[in-house]
Amino acid sequence: MKNEQEHTSDHDSRAEQTGGAPYRRLEDVVGCKWSAAVLAAIGRGVTRPGQIERFIPGISRKVLNERLKKLVDYRLITRTELPGAVPHTEYALTQVGSKLCAIIESVRDLDEEHDTNAEDFPLN
Image (cartoon, rainbow, N blue to C red; front, side):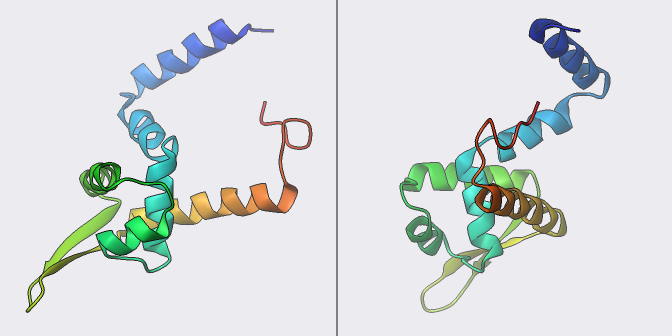
């Protein structure tokens, strides 16, 4: 049986062989609680930055802006500037963002359904 260090190096080797970029992007999005929360908020119809900030307890304006930019860069959300008497910006999920958001929501639902902990729901 491989020890954890050997397993990690095998994983790193596979990531290098496949370019690693998709894994790094996925980790950056899914591994960041703020990115997942922002995707979930937009998926629930909260589309303006101020609304998103109020929807997600504890997120700062700076972190929200960084995450929104990163999610736009990864093409998981779109950014639309709307003119008018009071111009504003709205965000929406892309098709890929919508698929990822559904996966994140499914994992959240699974966690709530099973009230998971290491003994009840081992991921190894």
